[in-house]
Image 1 (tube, rainbow, N blue to C red):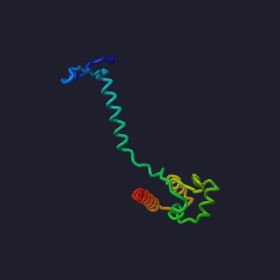
Image 2: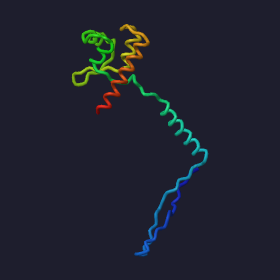
Image 3: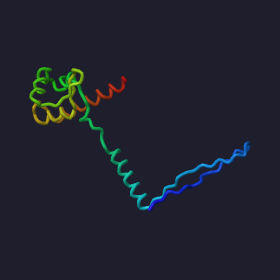
Image 4: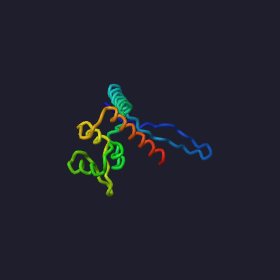
Length: 136
């Protein structure tokens, strides 16, 4: 298997003072098959990260935005919260909803929707995030 060797790396000589400086380095050796397996795993991780799309379902929107996008009143949204039809988080007195919870709400037909409406909602949310990042 692998072993660690103490290896003397480089000799620098200070000609003015004639001091000898030695640098020590640990050399770790592993079998070629283990190295290839490690490289394959790293390549798989890299490919996975490149292919993984941005999860827009985890995007947080506030109550005002949800009311505008879904054409709902705040009272209707409040009723949906009380009936546990929509998941939310309350942070410092303000309600936030994930785009994923809104998608589930639309799919469950609690609110009238079409596929194009769902796409429009996603595009508006993406635009909101990009605009917010631009102003920071």
